[in-house]
Amino acid sequence: MTGKNVAMIVLHLRGGFTALLLFFECLATVNCIKGWCVGRIPPSRFEYKKLNGFYTSLQAKKLCENDIQCGGFTFKGAKHGVDKKEIYFFHFVADDQISLNEYLKYPHWSTYIVSSRDFVAIRGSYASELTSSSLLRTKHM
Image (cartoon, rainbow, N blue to C red; front, side, top):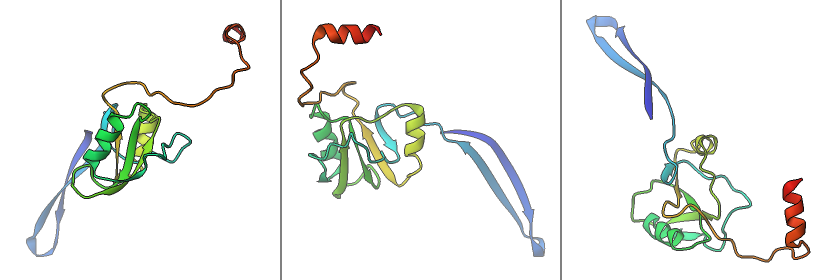
């Protein structure tokens, strides 16, 4: 976070009492690209429901870092603490500046974006009707 336009206001109250009020106007710029962030990942089709459950933040971090299909997780509360929280995992977590600023709309939530790698592997079956030559043709269109 960077501070901008720091203003100092002096208020004169009755009885000769003077109060000093400092007002800080801050522009929130999120520097979290990987690791811990303030805010909530919104529900999406990328939710990794298989892992959702109650964990400590440290347990959730270890679980996600060691699962190649996990891109991050979010939960209500502070990242520090030993109590278990309901954790929501995701295959993909957008970490661009616009998305990170959206997450900030929920400052009482915490988010972790996997920092040990910059990829995820998603298991599944894919349409086999496309051949490699038809894929090449569609790439050049």
